[in-house]
Amino acid sequence: MRRLLYAGIAIAVGVSASSAYAADDPITVRKRLMDANGAAAGMMVAMVKGDMPFAAGAADSALKTFNAVAHAYGDFFPAGSDQGETKASPKIWEDMAGFQQKLADFQQAVDAAMAMKPASVDDVKTAMGGIGKACGGCHEAYRLSNN
Image (cartoon, rainbow, N blue to C red; front, side):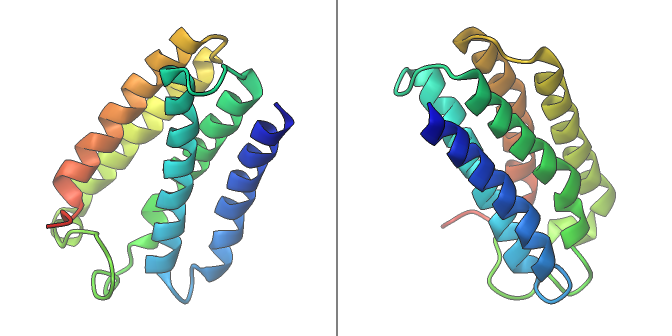
């Protein structure tokens, strides 16, 4: 149980530490923020699948990570940061309003999940349903595929 809590804390520290790189390398910050989201999602999915027991503290930490990313991520798309090693689609800069709406949808899903205060695996399933839908919608529209 303590390891799960420490993992959540490590994710949150990683998210906050990445802001130090923001001015110089927004692509690196975006990647680190998405890595943090991936780690948080992995923990929540493991609970849903039964690969790890439900732990309220771990679920809360994962949601706090999603929240930090949701409210910071949009700040790291300055002009010119579409160039380089990134999976960010040029559509982001062509349709910034649409991209910002997808981020707002993600923020709403995370805010709703946090307000729920998951107290069971079923609550985590519900929370991840909304979060997953928001993530997928943005990825489909604004992330380059691996092909």
